[in-house]
Image 1 (cartoon, rainbow, N blue to C red):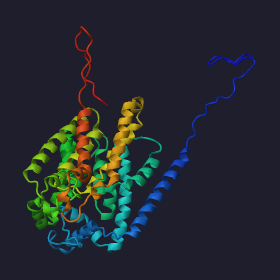
Image 2: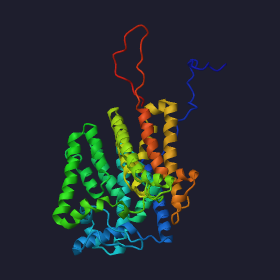
Image 3: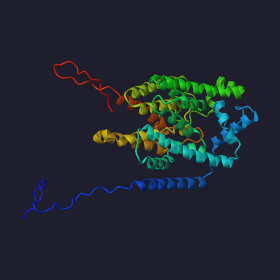
Image 4: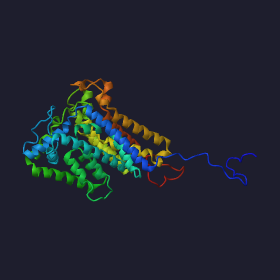
Length: 434
């Protein structure tokens, strides 16, 4: 008896045999958080071993403690210098008020608390980045644990933790605010308070206004004004000093030409081999802020608000006079967005679109894990004497930021409307690339 042809029913009196194709085995849902937790444990253990083998002064944390101590002691907030690098206070008086609890802790306790807080904030940033990317899955806890384990070793995040910086707190404040639903009560206020601590996020309020979110932009302005008013009421002399003089002294923050600076001013100074690019830098910053905000607004209008928000955040980092490498903790949502898009049904259906996003994710991860700026000669003033072929290695973040803006501008160009031969144009909206 011959076997039935493919697709035919088996002969009468016989039953079909078991299917030869078995569904792929999947990890049980209850095991995913366990495995993700183990991955996070391994990552934290490796970080602890690294910490034990290196002397970590957490210089920025020492500055914050000194700011808090100056407030509590009634001393001049912008006169002191601490650490062997003689670092001064550079934040508004409102930030110094927030640092007063840290000043009351012994340094070892402050260091431990800062590291613990940064790890919690990193997990929160991963969660908010997934929310920004539109990830709504049952396994989000596993993704947060895995994302935290991996994100700890991104150069900006790693530097933030070992310096005792507040970048993660600022990014969490901004994303916790702007990822809330449209019309949410008080939306924009946390952004204004974040700008009251670090001025740079204020550019995101401009993005809100340009995208028609005027109430949110007004609340952000009110939050910023409230932070400045509180500083003025409690620290009047320091407030007048900061807002009339210290804010404009870029040299207080550090040398703009060193490879640590990943704003546009850094590579401009290094390419021109000058410590002060002068008017050329000002022109480049004005052009970039105009183009960057225009690209961000267009992405928002074309149904890609998450991409628009990230373009605005990257624009702020590019045009700031100084954006140290650890300021680029926005790398976490920057990587989360293409990673989430790879799993979209529309992207899976397009081989080209999927591979494009895989390439974007791989390239972005290579930049933020690569630490190329630390692999070029940078002792002393060698940053100012780099040959042309080392310049891109010394400026990976601004180059990636510019690539993001250019790529977004190209991907939101209107396609040509389709016409039926011999007829009027079709009455439908212009199509846009995904």
